[in-house]
Length: 353
Ligand code: NDP
Ligand code: ZN
Image (cartoon, rainbow, N blue to C red; front, side):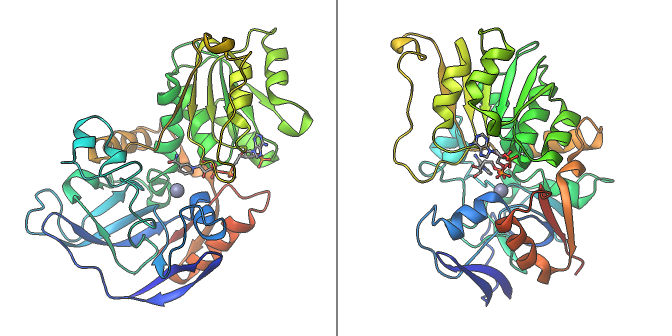
């Protein structure tokens, strides 16, 4: 089979590989919609997870099941399915402990295009099919549903980590596709004021559509200072960090009220340490909580998120600024993600076999 792969740090290309084998609990799928991710760019061009050779990329897909193992109960060939970016081993102790994304070790649920080939292949392997797959609901567009792999669960997890409550004032730092879903998630959880931090006009417009009440342009000066000015010096109840560099945690602590929470969904590359400002952290006693987390996954979670598309409580089509048709277009879509023109939010590739 053919796949679009990381050949080494900074290098990508089409390769031929054996079709993956199906274990008793697993499924083999082929993609019908896939999306490249900022994480793919970090993986290839920043070497974020270290050296990999001939590893098929991609972790965001809607697919069709072509084969299932003899112990799979609830899926069969021909089923159209949602494929989460994170595919934990549900029998692991970490999953039983409430942290499936860390099954088998920290971040161990992140398998696609990390420990094994991803979804940019003609076929791909899904472990623990009954635990990880969910049916694509009737009437939901596969391109829209593809945003359920990573953008929705990751963005929404920001609100969960920050424990956004009714009436909270929330700042979402970064309004790329992940942060936009952070905004949408905070709005769905009942935030009152949502300060969205970004600069690109298309992202700003869509952030407002998803519920941002105010926009803060980080290019206009210190973000924390701008937020403190808007809140008469009080700061916000919650911060979701979905953009910026390692300095963003420091910024978030500075704009947070005592007792507030920061939910980080950013990937931090580059520097080895994050800084916490001593004074603004209440010299160690400010009750300001910082939590960072990889998205939760699992069939039930995916079904619940998909039901938001069915009931139209969430419209992911706003994220899809660039659409491609055909498996061969994966390369173009990934390169677009790498170049990130200012009107790009998320590209999607639809594949008709
Ligand atoms: P994008 O690059 O599309 O968006 C980044 C956002 O951050 C943009 O709105 C950008 O503004 C803003 N930004 C850039 N620089 C700054 C700055 N200095 N201060 C504040 N804001 C800034 O990224 P994605 O939305 O695709 O991903 C966001 C993060 O989430 C990435 O780190 C990614 O790796 C991570 N991620 C994490 C996952 C997880 O499971 N935890 C999964 C997927 C992604 P502008 O409008 O100017 O572009
Ligand atoms: Zn992703």
